Length: 342
Image 1 (cartoon, helix red, strand yellow):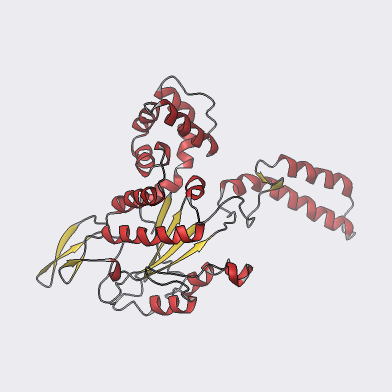
Image 2 (spheres, one colour):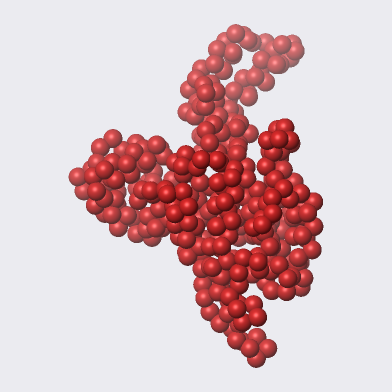
């Protein structure tokens, strides 16, 4: 389970309105029939229109400065193993989203009218998506890029030859292209992976748009706060502030496990990913101390994630030397999950 929290992008592409982001989240619906489309929803309502989302988020920004984000985006990415546990993907993910937002509320160290904030103080809209495409920053696309550049160059040469602009052997060039296609390191269904190609397998995930202001448009609730929990004096009154990201990520994981009776392996846990980032030696030590069956599953999961561990090393130092660098790359998303992406 990877969860990221990102502030609104304030740039030439993403202006003050949430409209660009909402339209982006509608991309999947444009390619499928109406009966298969996923709609925006919140804690109590289903089938919310994009227009309503835009209107409510854009009109809930009282006293926010132009340079301040008006909303935050929470992206929830269940693993393929977690998705297999769901009986009805869309309905289960919707159920989980509503429970997750209760965890989000609990992570705030805030009070409104001298009472801890509750779910009704949060204005949010969520959307489930079931497909993903490869991005230009994905490892598979980057490592295929040298082959793609050479293939493009050869295709341009063939085009020039056919147009009479240069002399050459088209058949020879086509054979070179076939060889490059064959040697490209990353393929899917026999085809070289390129940017924009749809990823195979279950890719269901959740996008949540959360207003920076509470539902009354009176109080600012920022998950980007650098404070976990503190108090500050404003206008002579003590005001609580802060957002505990660690608590949110841990509770979100526990909520999934409880809701769907999911038995989480050590290497899947937020605690383990965080331990790997902070103290790799402790991570490897804990990995080797797992019960035999759980340890075998852990190594199987690591293997499927792209870490080719064929046998269990005899000590944590040997394991660290063999796997550390590859595991470090695999936890880049986890690093993002342990901090606010602003």
